[in-house]
Amino acid sequence: MILLPFLMMSQNTDGTAGTEDPGHLLVRFNDPGVRAWGVVNDDVMGGISTSRFGISDEGRAVFTGYVSLENNGGFASARTRMQADLGGFDGIVLRLKGDGKTYGFRLRTVDRGRITPYSWEAIFTAPAGELTEISLPFSSFRPVYRGRQLVNVPELDLRNIAEAGLMMSSGQSGPFRLELDWIAAGRSEK
Image 1 (tube, rainbow, N blue to C red):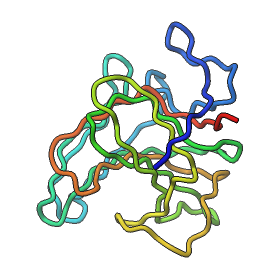
Image 2: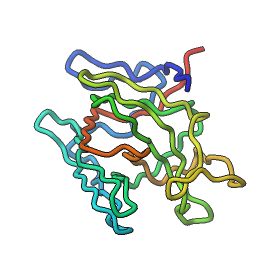
Image 3: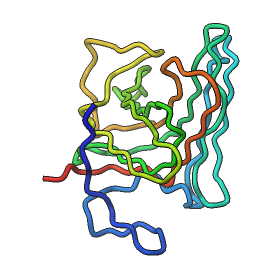
């Protein structure tokens, strides 16, 4: 997969986002008004994976847990509702600190007044150890439902984003930990 760099909101020296660039901050986890994120794990279908999503003392989101492939399981996820029009952007940018594992970033949309039952997912590897920015072009998002890629669905409607989330799956078992500073929409460099 080729990841394109995106222009982002500039970062001020105090770590807060500036407004000079065309990026659009969707979630900054050190913001006290950040929406609640909930977790959904494979226990909804008999699995035994566990996860938590919270905010660290440093103001970073922490998605952590243990994925087990036993009992036909194998996933942990965290998600939040949002209303966003991303029609003028080219992708999502995550500022994160990872563990070297592979994750999915998911978006769900509204269709005829209802949130779609399927998600649009882009897969990425979260480099271990240091804060980095990961760019996920919208062209890399694929429609998925219960881990399977779909065909014959409408295109991703970027003007009607209703939910964003993270998924730990892809047949990986064991502990995981992903920390996020922020999630933003970005434009590709021209």
